[in-house]
Image (cartoon, rainbow, N blue to C red; front, top):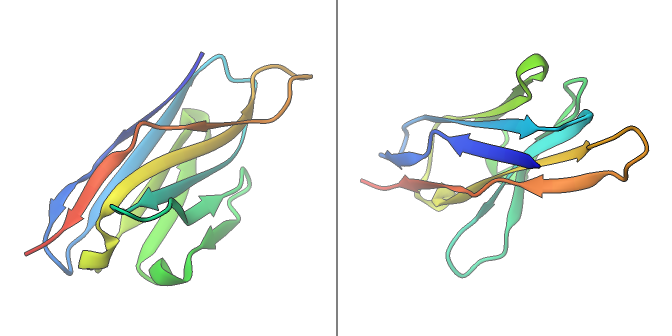
Length: 121
């Protein structure tokens, strides 16, 4: 069984910073791309940023220049450094990982439970 455990959310003032972490654990054969998505109340879940095993990154336009995604492959952990936070960044942030449990198993997508980020004065 695979688990993605997120941490680091909370309440922050506009202009502030937060760092989210997500650790994948369980019987993982190979971990491929990891990423962060977010969902605000009444909105659909949207991509924030993704990172491949080799460090190639992709960002939503709304967070470019403010957020940085990184990963520690030996620790199966992905991070999201969020700077210059705005009220519109308020959402539940979800970790996402694409992985294989065995060499010949299909590529599956797993999600974390979500962590709340609230940007407010």
